[in-house]
Structure formats: structure tokens, C-alpha cells
Length: 174
Image 1 (tube, one colour):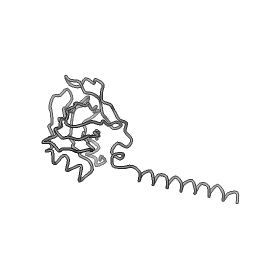
Image 2 (cartoon, rainbow, N blue to C red):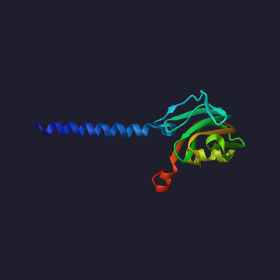
Image 3 (cartoon, rainbow, N blue to C red):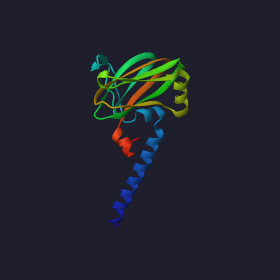
Image 4 (cartoon, helix red, strand yellow):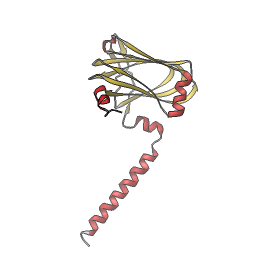
């Protein structure tokens, strides 16, 4: 009986932990899943990137909140050639606007990749997939500038994910 009691308590503890985890996972809405494990960055500091100032450096542990229409600048640090993915979670959509543009710059702004999304496509992707993503491969190491602008009328959350190219080539990246 003495040996059976700890086993019963351990089994009960495992069951309670499983049930708690199950309900906790079910309580997280799409917005909560989008920012899970990240902290909000007010993006109100001054980070020199290229020959301009970005409001913050975003990485895998942070996100920003904002409203369109607006334009903004963020920085991203790369330690090796990587795919940089900018993701948006859109809310309170009052108008899709004409166009949303992301400019991804290489280190020292030596080159730029412009990604433009038509307004209806931007909002439509959120409605269909629950998220809007755009990704670009950047080869330089160091600080990279990302500019964003949109004439849509909505609120958004934005995050950045960085996947080293070597992981994608090996088939182990997202």
C-alpha cells in the first residue's frame, strides 16, 4: 500500500497537468497565438540603422502594435545570411487601402528589396489565413532596416522571424 500511494499521486499529478495544459492551449485565441512567447516593444527608442533611425530592433522575442495608415522603421540584426519574415495580425479593419509596402534593406542599406501588397490582398490574406506574411532572403551580416507603409485603415501587430539560410538548405528551417 505504501508503494502504491506515491504512484497514484504521481499519476493524478500528471493527469491534472495534462488537463491544465489542454485547457490553457484551448484558451489562447488567434491573437494570443500570434504573440505567444513575445513581449510588446513600444518601438519608441532610437536605433541607428543605415543612415536613419529605427524605433526598435525586433527579433524572435518581441512584437510591435500599431495603426495604419502610417509608415515606420524597424531594425533587425542578422548574424548570418537569413530569411527575414515579417508577419502581421490585423484587427479593426475599416478599409483595405490601395497598397502596403515593405522595404527590406541589406546591411548598410547597400541594396533594397521592395515588397508591395495590394490592399484587398493584404486584408484578404488575414481573413483566409489569419495572418499576413512576407519573407525575403538577406545575405549581409549586421543591422538591417525594414521600412513599412500602408494606407489601410486598421490596427495591427507585427513580428519578425529570422531563419538562417543554412537551416533552410538543410531542410530543418520553418
